[in-house]
Image 1 (cartoon, rainbow, N blue to C red):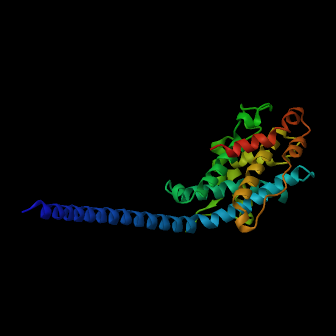
Image 2 (cartoon, rainbow, N blue to C red):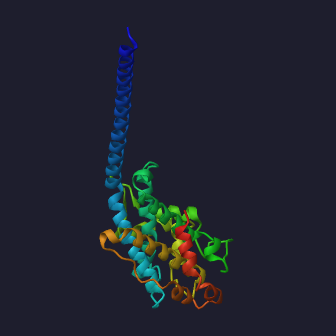
Image 3 (cartoon, rainbow, N blue to C red):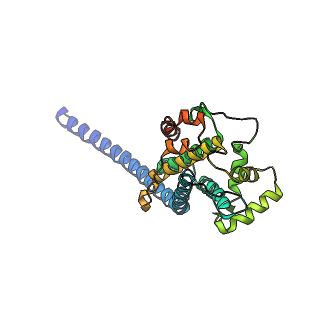
Length: 275
């Protein structure tokens, strides 16, 4: 058999083998891509069904929280826990944390790859607890007392207080405000030293001047809520509320808070921006 015949034959055979293997690899790659896309589609659908309504509820809760914190720095309100306004303020503080807890229960690790917005919700949750229970650079220069819960509630107790608002029905939900007074009353009776009772005592008759450090924590928490509105609220036509952080901190009329008032917006921005 001459080389003139063998060479084209070998080329044709090799070309056929290469074409077959290439087609096989492309088919496998395409099947993998299709499977990955189908998985991501199903994951997004599951995530939106489970978390979508909760995200909208969180937006509303954050707007109500930020609005309440902003209002407290302008006027003197009766925040006695025996009245409506005090209980409503406590409810507004706990509701975003309860909804964040419900979102966390519905979120898997893989959700962060299919929906980066899930990271925003985790950042909100983390920053909220830093604001209400933490220290660090945000509160540097303030007269913090870590020996007792006179300016904050310990994180574990605060988390427990937030979970008391979770109503475990077929689809767990956050309690409505009309359900809250009985939740509050029962929590105080069953656990007088628990997070709900302790946070209630901090909110009871609170004001910027009476509780400067706790007030600064409320300002920080409201800032975090307003940040969530900025990130998530526009799709639902909810915009951040006017939130003059420096003026709000100065409302305490406290020399150490006055000293950090100008720096506080930058400190809070760094807090929510941290991964």
